[in-house]
Image (cartoon, rainbow, N blue to C red; front, side):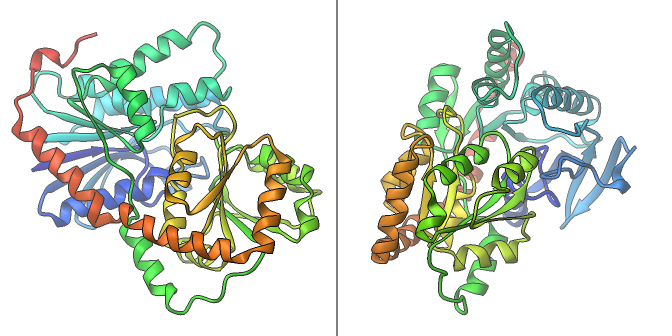
Length: 414
């Protein structure tokens, strides 16, 4: 198959979908397919282009034998709601003008939400050529932006919801990464599209690093929480730090290590300044990330209250892959809470309940065997997310799309 992947995040970007879509491209290449990637210039999670990329509109290059076309996209100095909208609009325009590879027509196109522009543009890239499309919903971007106050545009909610639905319906198949998100997708898109639950996966380079370190990993440090990843609004870390302070967690001996980058770095730095036992660091490379997980008592995964069923944090999977217990600070109705409770590899604490946080960590202190049991359950749950279990599902779905006739008259309906 000739497969075009359109993703704003791709190597050498780090975190979020960058590692996943890079790994998916490599998997499909190794399976013998003709894979090409359309993306932008590296900017994540720093939200800053490198100096050598400044001023370049289009660049064609090769990544591990995969042709890659990089297109210009506006990157705001601060990832505010309006700044993200400008990014989306600029990427849409770049994709519309330069998103196709000259002399090459894909059999199928794969892209993802939360970058709304790369989903909307599917309506126009190959409008009358019968090219089927698969969209992966990693994040309901409109709901997340509106509900968390990232985007404040009175009266625009209806229009944005319409655009998101219209963009998603440009695909013959829409997949998403949790059962709860699938139910939400069904309610939004309608019954005339093929809707699937396919989870995210533990990508190849991460698993290789874990295998390399696991045999000689040191004993886990006691009374230590580890957070590494994006420091954005959705994660709600400033709120968690207030909860950590109010619960006086440092008084019962627990320490918290935070590593990462993103739009909330300055707020997190200010919030952590006067809290004993909290340390901050930058984005970790994969080796140090794995070492941190293998040596900590538990992995902290946070979601800001009110985020709903809009996303499932990607940092959950490395925790499972390293058999690290999880402290999930999130609403109990969220996909994250559902996964932690179903797998039994951690505990869920309400983001607005300092007493519950203190009780949980005090219990773990007194009964370390609880963490040992959770570690074993994390190891067992990780098999669900192995690369070999997940990526063949995507390959099979892409084949299915190529073999099915495409209704060209349904390519640009409103």
